[in-house]
Length: 273
Image 1 (tube, helix red, strand yellow):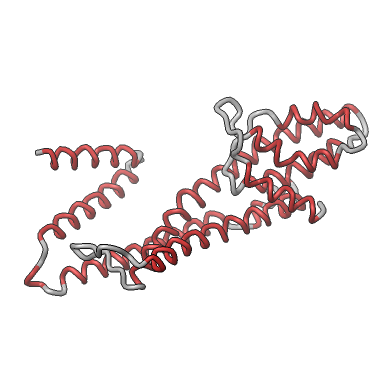
Image 2 (cartoon, helix red, strand yellow):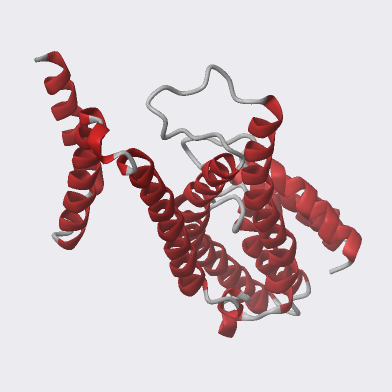
């Protein structure tokens, strides 16, 4: 794939969610992203393009960042479809293309949801809060300052934004190239990275960061032992209780959503009474 074509797909990938619908999800976005490549591939056979577009307008749904692996793999397989030497070969390649589209979209969705939504989003929030704490904005104070300096807020928010998007843009850009040059044996380049280990390490780093900030908060409240704030003790006990119950529900394979709902109900009842 030429660099210029890869760049076009990369730019258009930001519009994958455009036209999202409940019937076929990201099918319009996928077609929009791949359209320049399809026009280039079938430039000598424009009559075939409508039927090709029909295939891309079928159901497609995956995590937007990890979708880049689908773009490269589908592009490579589309070339095989376009250059099929017989009708039988053509049908075989189209069937393979459909299998790749379905299987890879499910795999990338699973990895992307766990990595970007379940791990990286919360981690960048923690990094932002940690940056504020290091800048002297002590949000553990019982009474928060009337205002936070604008430059501090912009720095903390910009740091979270840059960390998340630096990783996302790298995966978007490299994913197209890696999946286009890889084959099915390496799951179109997905096995090049140890995703489970990356997610595991990122989560552990987030836990260390969160525990560090909580310990700082505990130290801040308990440094004057004689003036312990009963409200702090109560809030700390509630948080500790929720964390313990969260681990218990995980062991029992109970969705944490039920824990969150129960916590909201109980706290609202307590506040009402």
